[in-house]
Image (tube, rainbow, N blue to C red; front, side, top):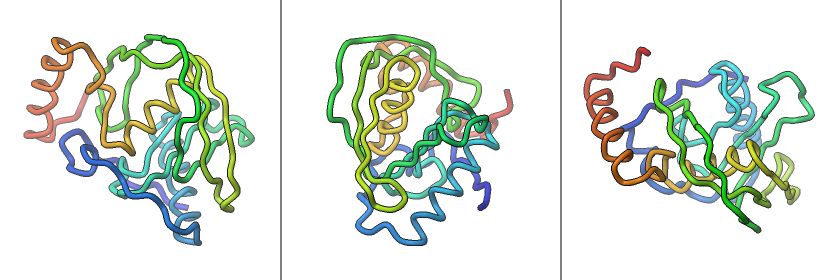
Length: 172
């Protein structure tokens, strides 16, 4: 397992949809393990493959931030089965250090995808888990939380982010 560099706002990979995984092989299992290590090292509660420069529909989520190995969720080709209700809470992103916002997200989601062995899994999430699933699936769809803010907040933040990306100055 290896910690991989996290790409920042402005990197082309973060702004375009990812490809579906055709076959879960040793390379995909290694990618999942590396993503978990990278997420823990950051530290964060979720990570999508495009955030480490890999254009595949792969996400990992762990609300325990490494405290409880049974909480690690690894999903290949995740998709929403159910999206219900509405919630709005602060979110941050490992690819946009030092920035946060409160996009509107579903209050409850059901997500399905394949695990590291290719077995279909389904997870229900509310509150933080629902937000984490939405945030990471947005990444594999080429969206960032900033894209879901109100137009005024989005435009103001994107102006600041473009400056950071140009100067590559992500120190907080």
